[in-house]
Length: 79
Image (tube, rainbow, N blue to C red; front, side):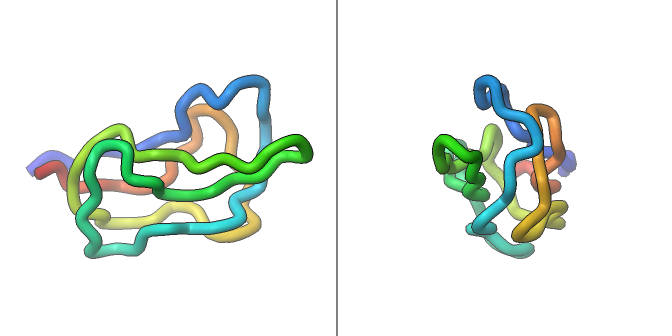
């Protein structure tokens, strides 16, 4: 089984936005487009969905972490 790093996609002109909620934990199975985290800038809150389906192996972010496009959110084992 392949391990996949799920990263923050292009979320517009946002850099270093705060993670305000982590919606998954290790061991959970996620589908494509399952919401993984919620981030908040000074202008908006948005959910970041999964780009792949699989089982969450490791969550790389926590509440109050800052993320930008390309930041690793978690590691999935592909199914």
